[in-house]
Length: 452
Length: 95
Image 1 (spheres, rainbow over the protein chains, first blue to last red):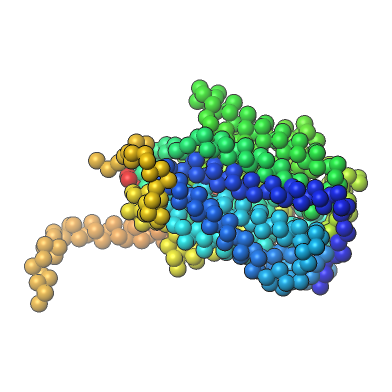
Image 2: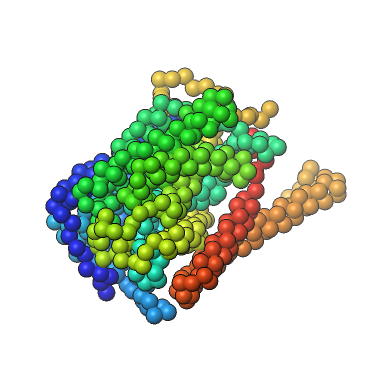
């Protein structure tokens, strides 16, 4: 069954979309570099190599079955009827991209974009599993995430699924709205990061005998901050491409998307810097970097629907939330997340999704109703916040248990955590046989507690 | 005979064996409690989502629908809290 007919965007918009998609890999580069910089030096090469592997496996898994289950609005999907309403729950495309014409159509561009974004989703858990997540386990976990969890939820949001149709079917605003993937990419990846952190447990030496966390600083702050700048470049492309492909934004709207993306990032990064300066006497570079990423994540949801001042507010709140969430997870919940992935991506993403319900102006003809989804056809904005809450509830009530179950199952079959010896040696030597910085003298780790 | 009776382990005092048994029992009880908490937490997450879906599908867009959607989200948050509590703070994991 076909969900709804798709209308074609203008040629100009498609050209701009193509250019935007070309920028998206910079998000992956940025996140990989941030993760590597926040990890230990003895695991840096392993982190970058695993990033490359994750991007490869994710793209292949998406090619094999991911697109078949995600699809694109207006293309075949499985729909059932419940309580008199149709529920579009999964796409019905053939595997291996069969049936997809690569002719520059929105569906083909969406397939290309998502082969890249699915790698981003899978990179996020690597930040929380740094220094102890085995290479092969990370790749198996990626295959599950990219082949099943992500396509299913992304279909509901971007593929004309039931969340996108909450407006038309149930009168909830314009349906669940997420322009650049705050939920589909960021929260899904962030919840994956939480799952991995739970299953792996903290790094050895992270918690002392009395349960207090020990600081294990990242090994290269320059890399972390450089990654933030790269991520900004890629994120601008990601949000622009998402606005054109999934929301039907016209050419002129992309400038607003880019400006909002930049404003949220800088506001969030500055907010984190100011907060850490006030609390600790000096700004904390790594927390500010996480704040920067959190701002990019938060604005992704509504970047095409808010004005610049609102983007600044969204960024400021994201910066504060991410800063406190990192501390909360580490101190109160004993979740060891070296890359701050859970706070930046899951917490920042959930805030971004909710901010659409608070700030977005979707009414009027600002965006064309592309793809047969119902963002302009709902009954108004009164139910928009409720639609966003339904989306958050789906992430917590469906995506999190599914991700945990799949990773738990994988852990039973193939233990995901490296043995103690691997952590002592460092992942570079243990799994790759060579370190990232072979010309440097190896020191004992100065920042962790040792058994006396 | 493998000389088991003469091994140093078997010659340990009864109190040591009792302490060892108690530690194993406590550990099992604790892990059992953690597993139960985790399972209950995930069940609450799913149940909360079910409440949200039911509210959207079955209730008219009036006052009751938002209340039930928020109630479902509340159940999910409770479930999330339980799952988080089921992962205790590790102690004494020196490198």
